[in-house]
Image (cartoon, rainbow, N blue to C red):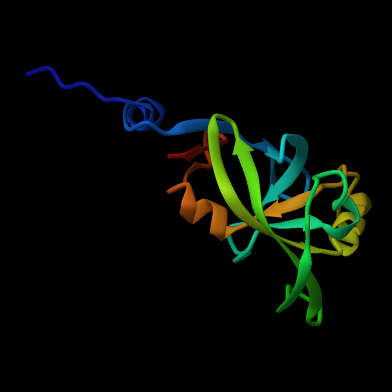
Length: 149
């Protein structure tokens, strides 16, 4: 009996997943190209972040209308951080698109300072678990691909 094995990529493509390239950087993170409201930028994939963020300084670049948020962000080594909230945005990652996407804004200078110290280029934001859940994400670390449905 002949058996065939199909790759993860082939299997997920048959299940209508979109394949997105992940780009490794020196910090052991992956950068992903993301479009928000038609504007392209580099985002860090952070499976431990509950929410996706855009740097506050890039509010105009990404055409984000914001409101004050009562939610405070926290991360490794930092106290609670004030955030803004932007609703009804369009996010596109590869061929995967979602409308009415909500994103938080916060000061990412401490993140970019850390990347600067290891000669990694700055990022516009963080792609968190909220997007990974919405996209039913599958991560192939070995081949460096992210899949969204």
